[in-house]
Length: 353
Image 1 (cartoon, rainbow, N blue to C red):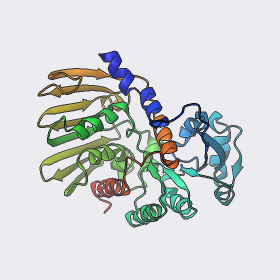
Image 2: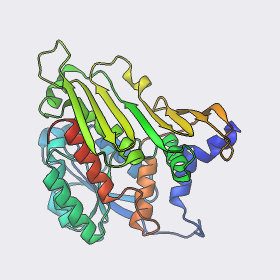
Image 3: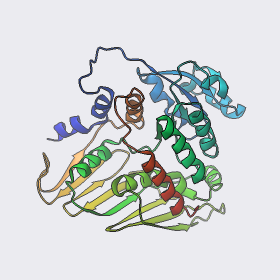
C-alpha cells in the first residue's frame, strides 16, 4: 500500500497531474510561458533553476540594478548565459507572460506593483511586505486584470500538504478544533542583522510559510495574539522567539517560530486535529505523515498509520501549476482573499498592525 500511496502523492506524481489536464494530448505542443526575473537579492532567488529546467518555460531575461548583487549572481551557475537587462526592457519584451519577483524583501511590493501595472502575472516571493494597504492594492489590481499573484510559500505543494487538503475537502478529519505548527532554525549573526531591520522579526521571515498553512486549514481567524521575544544573548534587537495564537469560533491554532533552534529543520511540523482524525506532518521538508482515524477512510484504515513520501523538490510543482493557470487550464487554488488573510494575520502576529 505504501508504494501505491507514494505513486499517488509523490512530487513527481503531483507534477504530472498539474502539467497535463484532463483529456489533454501529451504530444500536443503548447506555447512556452515567457518569464523573466526581477532581482536576485531574495534568499530564494535561485529557484530560477526550476524554471530554466522546465520545458514549459522560456526564461527571457533578468533584472538587477544593484551592481554588487549582479556581480555576485553572475558567478553562479543558475544565472549563467542569461541576458541582463533593465526593468523596462524586461517588461517590454513581446509576449512576456510572467515575472518572478525575487528582490530584497524591502523592494518586493514596489516591484510587484510595477509588474501588475504592466499586465504581467507574477510569482511573488515571501513575505508580502509590511504595507498591508499596498499589498491589498496590488491584489485588487491583479484581480481586475485576471492576473495571477502566486505567493512563494514553500509548503503549498508539499505532497503531504496536498494530501491534507484532500482529507479536508472530503471531511475525513471531521470538525477541526486544533492546529499546531512550528518552523525554526538557527540564524547566523549577519542574517540576524538583516532580519532585525523588520519589526516582524523571525515570524515575518519564517512564520509566513506556516501561517499560510493554518489559514489554508481554518481560514481567517477572529482574533490574533502575538507573543514576541528577544531571547538571544546577541544584542541585535531581533525578535527571535515568537508565538502567535489564532482564535476561531470553534478552534484554536498556534504558530511558533524561532531563530535559535539547533537542527530546527528536522522538527518543523504541522498538526491538524479534528473530531474524527489527526493529521501530523513531521518534518515538513522531507515529509512523513502520522495519520490517526476514528474509522476507515478510502484506502486508509482505522487507527494510526504512517504515510511516507519521496521526491519532494520545492517550487517544482509551484512552477507547473503556474503554467496551467496562465494557460487557462485551471483556476488558482489560492484566492486573492486567502493571500490577503495570510498577510493580515501575519502582520497582526508580528504586532506590525
